[in-house]
Image 1 (cartoon, rainbow, N blue to C red):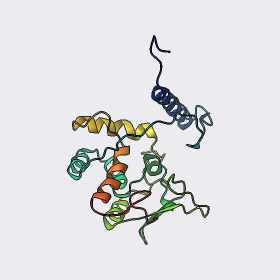
Image 2 (image 1 turned 30 degrees about the horizontal axis):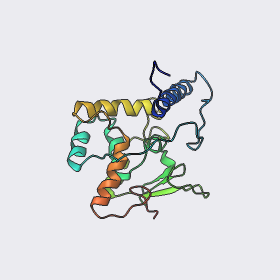
Image 3 (image 1 turned 180 degrees about the vertical axis):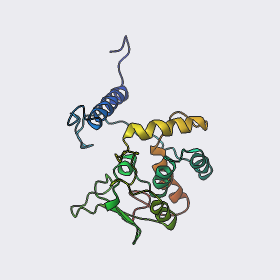
Amino acid sequence: QRGAKEVKESSVNRALAGLRRLFNFAVDRQFMEVSPFPKTPKSKLFYSEKKGLRHFFTEDQMLKIIEAAPDWLKPMILVSYYTGMRAGELMGLRWEYVNLDIGVIHLPMSKTLKDTTGLGQRIVMQKELIDLLKGLSRNSEWVFAKTDGRPYRNWDLIKPFKALLKSLGFPKNLSWKELRHTTGSLMHIKGVFTNIGAGSENP
């Protein structure tokens, strides 16, 4: 109870999500070895929430976002926009999963497709995406890494992107996940059939 009001399940989920980010931060800074939170999304630790309508950015809005984004963030926004990759998949992307010669990205840990071969979901890249990745530094095993070579974490990405949206006058309820929704929604509008994720060659 909070005063006389009952705490909603969504409030509990937000509190748990905050604790999970705190533990992940502690692990990242080597204050602890592992987080007590389960790694699987099917742990049923969080309450199930009803999903409403999915918001997405228009092409004109995406142009404004990309133009206003800082240099370090712009490639990540573009890759997410081109492929529909989740933030976690983007931050966990290693160069070993990227084949620029044939233009394919492998996502072995994708939530969209579980594959026992280890290849997982395959994303076929367009020329613009291949050129973008070819222009990135390879000073780390991670495609997107900080200056010290470590991968970005959730708090490194989400907060700056929210601040970017705020500076452009977007509603507060929009966040990074809308980039993935945008990819799928624009593909649908243009008549491209997609079932499990934008940019995937899987049916």
